[in-house]
Image (tube, rainbow, N blue to C red):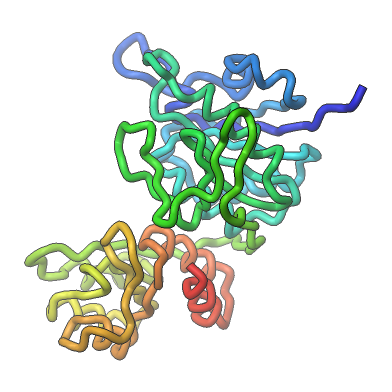
Length: 321
């Protein structure tokens, strides 16, 4: 009899692990083993090893925990690794993992939009799909699986608070789970294998109408080593914010992202004060098509790794997004 592949499941909590609490609401109580037992169809696919690392809402996950998760996945002898967690921060944790991970086994993130007590709970189906993807994904790849779709962590975002179709990629999913198999439509993202023991503190601020930018003034005294500014549209700020952002470049790296949900930061179209040509000319670094919250993680890692050429590395990476 042919030996079945081994899939390691690491559980971090989240809605997929939540059950009703006696007092109020749902809380994460289900273990990795509980999640696996709830999906009988998994038993014929592989041998599953279960480990519950934490049982938390995903807003509580940290850089350190995801780094530790990657090291555990790399040390595992399993043919594939699945991570179950809350969806709120999954676009960020999966992206961070794609920067840190250097293992051979495919690494797949999944979760649920509905807790186990709700009608139409999607956790079991997502876990089953994640297993199918994990067994067919390229070596060393990192992906996010929700609602029968496979997403590249660099392009996916949670765009709805409750819909099963909450996760959307600007250019569409890279794969789809159909009739028990996976149809790949694009290349799966391979982990970059960066190492970083001390992520640098990087602030993320968003430009809003008629704000005087006093939060920018405070950043150096708060201990931040860099800031990502989510600007209007293609990379535009008010004149007040533009002046403050330019002064900040004397103290720290300042990245120019967009608060828009899709599209790239421009570099050579608008020329008025506060537009991208002016801002880049005054030292702000554009993030290309990378969203601000992901650019923040990338910059934090590069600065924390004390790479002398962090700007060159960052620029090269964002040009590929």
